[in-house]
Length: 232
Length: 232
DNA sequence: CGCAATATTGATTCCGTTCAAGGGTGGTGG
DNA sequence: CCACCACCCTTGAACGGAATCAATATTGCG
Image (cartoon, rainbow over all chains, first blue to last red; front, side, top):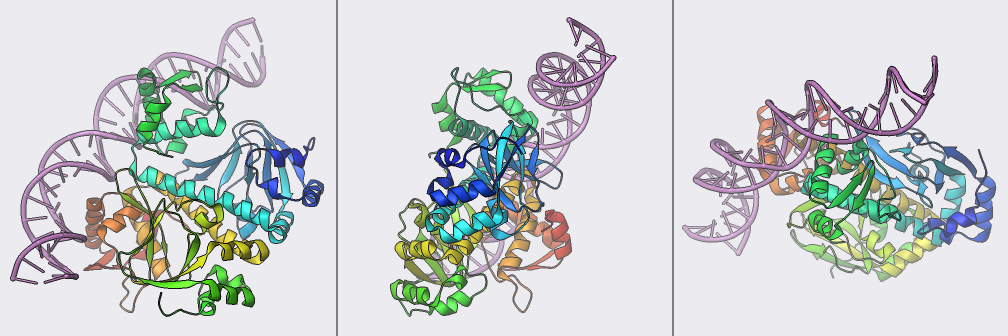
């Protein structure tokens, strides 16, 4: 429980579903929500646990993953400022099907389930935009099923690097605005850590990327795009 | 355009989202919908094409797939009676992101986009149940990403066989109520046709399954379940 | 009946995993 | 302040699962 940010600010953030809530709904949310700070590594909610509300990210970055039977994580999404999480469990009254963990310090709001469900039922525009959001995620998930099934690890790594740039942008020096461990990168691509390391150093020696510590810069997007075989 | 089935019948079918539409909405849908028969192999809509309505399946079975850059299909879902398709494109006003093709002769209704969107906006219960449906698919998709990334082909084939039984049931002799080509099976599992054939004949010689032509009977569910490492 | 699609089996290759060992880095506490 | 420890990164070697290529066999439809 810390300094509470203003939801009206959040709702203006890019591609937030909350752009369709009315002023009074906004006020209602404000009055019912709580906020909390999380440190890198903190788990916001865990796969299998009960959630009784949704989480909105004011700042920071989370990874959303499923854990395999051998304990290996598969990252299925990231969440950053303006994003909403946990709606699946809330809407379906089911335990969380993923784990959400901070990879950067984060400030996150919590909105009780009843508030969200009420708005979904009474505000058709909000329901529609939330649906569009879920549909988009569904499409991305289906695309990724195809990619993991059909592409090589090299192709998928190229794709993931481009996705990270699109999703998180670059800083003034051109480096990706996100740092992941090699293991986390492997857990997105769906491969072994060693494979990611080998391929990154291949890309580096082919001058497709530049690596400085944990920071990565894409040097040849056209090549990566061609390699990734993604035409979106 | 053929003999038009009654939507009230459809809406009673198991797990149909239409169970939440009101009587008058139902009547409205009836008056606006059109129906069509499709033969095995017919494509209902193709990835990239525009759809201006949703499809409801009265009878028959479809495969929903994405096509990779080399033309290989990745099946991401099946649709059978009571299911709805194409809502993603309708809700988001985007081209279809998958192809839907009949693998059994099918009778399919078409409901114009405006009708569905109108009901979503005005009937909160319907919006909610449609959302729950999409969320369920999203969760299944994310689970499958993890599975393809982490499990062996053998494990995934076991999982797919169990899924087919759950989804389509068995006939009086215990055989799966669906027949797929080996290639289609491979396109679900995400592997090569030859690999599926080899593994099926392994399962057969281990007496885990029985194969009679295109028909498959699961003989040892417990073993398949253990093998698949799925605990759902 | 004949052709085309589907299924099967074998041989070979190779991509990626696994196992192993060593080097680097950052954070913490004495 | 720096020494130590845990964690992360890197590289090498060997193995193995699955893809690919190739050559039939079988099925079922027109």
